[in-house]
Length: 216
Image (cartoon, rainbow, N blue to C red; front, side, top):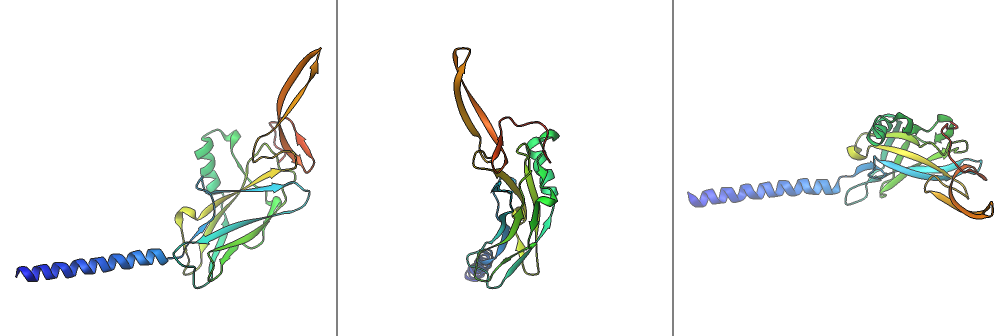
């Protein structure tokens, strides 16, 4: 009787182990799709040069799993303002004057509102045409997007949205980092020195002190 009980227990443990291995293998091989972004509120920074012309950027997605997918994975993109609402409240709370903004519609075109990860590959992307001239260096601009999968495509729920940030710069200054210029001189017979921060306006112009009123 005791031997029979041990045999049954051993068989049960083996079945459980096999089932656990099956689940583990499925997780390893599962091609779960995620929009490529940082862990900071799912933001992605696209630094674009002010040239007076359109600039090309990309929104990308990746497939997880041990192996590349054996068929094309198609991810649809929808514009969604909800991620920006959550971002503003999380970062700025009730200070609405500091809130980031949605990039104005006339400033961009998403060429194809879907991303295709080809069979045998791990990433795919879609092109975004940006027209950054005229954006204010005082403001933070995002395109809010949400991914939805077609049949058979599983989206990582933690990476199903993206805040695509457009950051402007020119040869002399950038929103991406503080651009400081030092100056020295003489006033009333005394030497003087100062550091000034510059902000990009157009391809060849900057502003020394950011104003309070945005251009857009």
